[in-house]
Image (cartoon, rainbow, N blue to C red):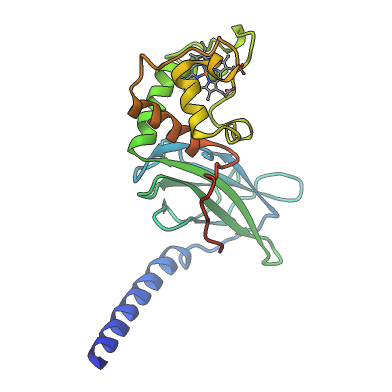
Length: 244
Ligand code: HEC
């Protein structure tokens, strides 16, 4: 019994010291030469990527002064839930007031909330939250199917590969991130409108049926994708979320 205890104490000690050794290494060497009063996102929020991979765009946060001008030499630290990593995890802002980090997503399909922080002159912490979405295999498949079959109507923006048809539609569909609309629909309703088209739910026939094109697992993948990218986030009925 006592051997067990000391063994676990040892392991705990090893983890604790390893954890401590990592952080100060980057932070201690960075000395801010200036302080701002606000932190704003310049780019890199609301991206999607496969679980465990680095996001295509870096996350860029800008430290501003009271007048809204960028502050050079301010320290920005990046934090995220378990599984997320930043390269670097802390940086001094450049001449335009910006700090840049590359984000690698965690291994779980989820919406990850990341936080960038800086300190103002009075040492008060200023924080900026951004959300990034990690797609698992199923949601990734749903995303691909969505790009192939749905995005031309559901995404008002055109891309290099796809011209949007949105402006030509008499009845406007919603973007797949529109949680206000999609969260009100049950999984059965989503499956039904995808399989049988808008008419199945007394909606416009401009929404085509895909029941002959897509098999069940593909429809499920689309639903899983819609649920994960939904903003505000979708909470499945009956699911209990742990309170922090
Ligand atoms: C040709 C255009 C078009 C395509 C392609 C299309 N949709 Fe739609 N979709 C619509 C329209 C229009 C509506 C709105 C119907 C209404 O509100 O009466 C709609 C509605 C929906 C809705 C209900 C929520 C909303 O946006 O109003 C869902 C869910 C949906 N579509 C999913 C899909 C999926 C998944 C695909 C691809 C497999 C797809 N749609 C492809 C036109 C399209």
